[in-house]
Length: 125
Image (cartoon, rainbow, N blue to C red):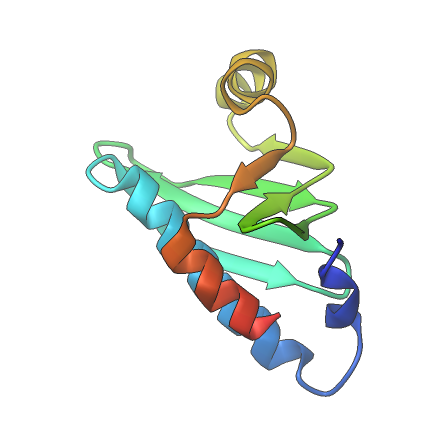
């Protein structure tokens, strides 16, 4: 069941996009805590995209991540963030992600949302 179909209409798009961005920031920060922090996260439902700026510790400047074709998929009791493409502004990170992380660690183009954050996202969606 694709649940992001509801997000492209109505006057609450900006508020929803902001709330989704905040929850996604919490998820990512929880996973990279100790190594870095999300400086900016912007979800845009009108084009199903996500733009991130992340600063890792000891790095002089943040790197950018652009994710397109973003959606939310609920399977049974699990919620996933799905995507069509992900690009990282630092070429070596982008190459590493596409060669190893996506196919071997993630096993595809979806990320499971931890239960405590899934509940928040489902309320927004």
